Length: 175
Length: 239
Figure (cartoon, rainbow over the protein chains, first blue to last red):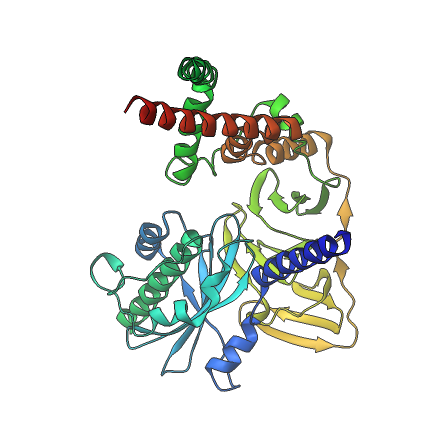
């Protein structure tokens, strides 16, 4: 009986440990993400200064100021890649996004530092963003389905999707 | 006789647990709306409660002085003088001031800061920041980075990372932080270390007074079950 109890406890511990080890970590190095997006030949990063009007629009989406005066992005004239960060619950989630022709081509969670809400890394969630565009008030043209227990991570990724499209639109308008 | 006995204890337990029911209900509702009520971003300032939770950094603050400004790591946070600028830092490596921009190196990142402590931008591996950074320094207005794989002369404007076998530089090193500044950042660290949500969660579960608090809340939960069962039984008996 004692042995069986020990086995059960060991299995429970292993399951708990493995589930938390899935949670945090670097899923894809940002430079590898860029290599994947641009077929191993990423362009030189460009600078985008976040000026007053753009800053105000970003604030409306995030609910707080962007913590940077400028951002870098990668543009090969057919698509743009963005590496953006936003806090889920307590810590930053690093997300890679690809945009082209005013729509999202791809969303990938690169680094997840929270202990909960990591399910947003799965394609069943991130694929919802494919083809999304901006409509009025810089909202997405579709509803992104949430994940139980990962509401804040879902919100963070949805905000970053909107920001990437807003930045893409801003660059197109500047052309 | 049996009915009267159960009714008597149903009433007694009901009165004794009423306050707990009200508290657990209110705290439960509050915890369900923690973001809207900003319980996770509003911090406790009471010293005795901060002491109870032992809110203090695991190690002494580490400071780097550059052009009369301090960059200080306290726990996982980094301050520019007394303003918190970065959270979630493992190891602060150093700071240099080049062309009125402060370049702060930590973990695998460089953060560029203006004189007003505004973050200009944050650079990581995607922008070419070498992995395994060991030290940051400067030489003739050039930023020099020593990493596990070699030395780099960096042009942050065009993100050019020239690799060398060896480079001389004025390396950023730690300095003794002034006592008043140290106290100030430590006070700030404590002041943003304990959100109301944490305390409310521990009150709700009883953890705030340790293991006996948990047992007390367990006992109250058992009493709730007894009240529910006796209530249903009395209703059924009368029927």
